[in-house]
Each structure stands twice: as C-alpha cells, then as structure tokens.
Image (cartoon, rainbow, N blue to C red; front, side, top):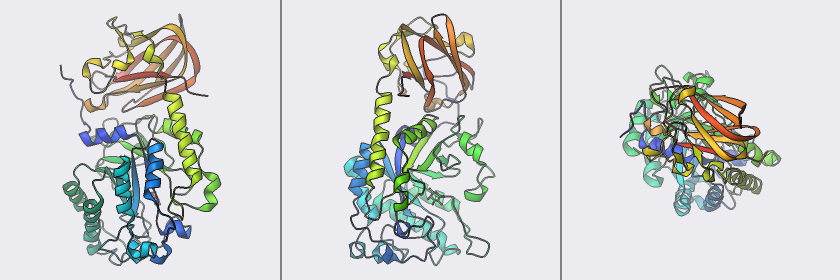
Length: 450
Ligand code: FUL
C-alpha cells in the first residue's frame, strides 16, 4: 500500500541532489594570482595565467575522493569570467593563458563528463568590474551570462548564487531582478538545483565552517526574507523551520584551507583528514550536503597537500563505514517478531521501511546474538515521503542493563550519531515525536576508529 506523504516534499531533482552528499568547490580566478580573497575588479586580465591548468587532474582527484561533482566559480565578485563571455571584456579571452583562446568552463565540462562527475557553477551576482553594474542593464547581462553558461557547458546539477555583497554606501548599487533570474534559470535549466541563502532549491547552512545544525529540517519559510543582507538568521539557516512551507535542504560550504582561494602561505594550514571527517559527521551526518572547497594553485592544479588530505579523508570514510555491524547480525523487531537483515532496508522498497510507533511502546529493538562493540549508529528517513521525526532516543543495553540513552531530534536524509564506544547486546530506537507516522528506511551500526 502506498505510503501517505507529509508535505512539503522534495522534487525528484532535490532527492537526487541529497543523495550526492559530497562534492567539491573550486575557487579559481585572478585572486589565485593576486593573493586576494575579494578582488577589487580592477585586476588586469593579464594576471590570469595558470602555467599548467588541467581540469582532468581536478576531476581525477575529485573522483578518487568520492566526490560526486564539482562547482566552479565561473565568475567571482571581481567579475572575471572563466569562459570567453560575449557580455564582458574581463574574461579569459583577454588573458595570456592559451593566448586568449582558453576556456576553463569548457575544459571542466569535458573533464567532468569523462570522469562521470556532475558540474555546477557559481556566478556571483555582485560584480565589481562590469561597467553596467548598478544599472538596469546589468540584470539582462547577468541573465545572458546564465544563458551562455547553461547553453555552452550545461547541464549543471547546481547553480550557485552567492549572497555576499560589499557595495558600500557610496558605491554602485544593483537592484537585482531575482524573480526574472529565477524564471530564466527554471526555463533553461529545469533540473538544476538553484542554491542561494534561501533557495529556492537548496539553502546555505548559515556558516562557512561546514556544519549544519544538530536539528536540521529540510524545510524553510522564505516569506519576508531576501538573499544576502535580508537572509534569515544564522540559526534558522542551520536548523531550518520545523513547520516550514518549502522543501529547501541545507548545503554546508567550507574550504579545505583558511581562504577560499589558493595562497601559498596557507599550504601548512590544509585541514587534516580527521578534521574533514569530523565535518562530514556534522554535515552529511546531520542530513545536509557537504560542499568542500579545494582551490587550485597558480599552476591551475590542485595542490599535492590538498589532494593528500582529500585521499586521507576518503580512506577514513571507507575504513570507518566499511563494516555495517547490522549487516551480518540478525536482529529482531519487537513489533512483529520477524527477523530482518539490515540489507533489506532500502529507500526505494516501501515494504521494508521500519514503521515504528510513537513512544516507548512503539519502539523497535535490535537484538544481537553476541555482544558487539560500537560507537556510531546511522539512521535514515525515506524523505521522499516527507521529513517526519522530531525527537528520538537510542537506548543501548548490555543484557538487562541500559547503559546509555542518546537523545536526538531530526533524522532526515542521513543521521550519524556517534558516542563513546560501548559493548552492547541490544538497542532500542524510540521515536518520541513525529509528524504523522514515523518511517525509517535505514539503520546501520559502526565501530569508528577513535
Ligand atoms: C562568500 C564569498 O564572499 C566568498 O568569497 C566565497 O566565494 C564564499 C563561498 O561565499 O559569500
């Protein structure tokens, strides 16, 4: 029997997007060569001259790191276009790189296809270079640039509208025509996830440190809010709104280095595999996606330090999540006494969802034949039917003793709950409050390396 849904619901594209979990961010442009984070827009196009740019190297590394795609700063706030746009004179075509015949977006779109990665673009609405910025004409220029990149290098899995804007009181001020931008993108790229502070399809998680709220609803109320300055408060973006009207899941962006762009001085400050793993637990493990920035250096290559850290991060994920302790152990549901193997649980097979009740009487018990050691439990809701669980507990038992009760709030796409390692013989999952009947699609248990 088909499940009842609890709206708002994700679109098929949003569901596929949530399953991507990790993808890379590439910040690259004149700032790579000037050492700046925010270019003034007055940089010379001649400063852009990577000596060995190779987008295939980026893709090879992304693929090996287990990332599912790459989002590139096609245009950052300094206005420099990494493709030869017909709507600007501040582009790769005016640079010495490949004698002005180079096209970073073309290279990347070909490399992504070759490596089976999805591509996305960041196009900064704030433009400190374009002469038309601050006039009505800029709105159609921005739209035309969107059309240009979608047509020439799409399809894109995601389109990133950055919220930063440092126009200042005396500078040019642009009245962005967001409504038309959105209509334009929807028309030319109906399957592309549009990201901004407030969506419409994916939202900023409210910080640039790479974590979502411990409570994280995929729902958000956007009425009365704007992008940038007028965005919802940080904690709202981190947590979403429990009764939010729109399905707008969170994306956690963070750089592998202190800066978004490459600076040699930060070579010793690349985040370690362990730090990245902790961020994974706080982003993907809280039901959000992780957008990890890995900025190419002045050669146009991902630096050895960054790629070593990414490989270490992948290794940690592989090692820690290789062995689902519930995979082999038979466990029982106290509801119906039927014994399941956890591998039967899958999002797309409704008959295998765990349909728990609410409160202790409706909980499910996972009973092991032998005591097992664990320190992490993974839960998933089949979010296609709506996000439901509001509060839950995991009660860990060794024989007749309850060792620990771990309380949680939301589950959503994926929830990784870690705790000090324990030897247990059973655990209960108890849902205390939920919108409509709770549904759980996945339960796994792991022993992570301490
Ligand atoms: C911010 C920008 O101002 C930073 O330069 C960077 O691109 C970051 C991802 O978003 O809003």
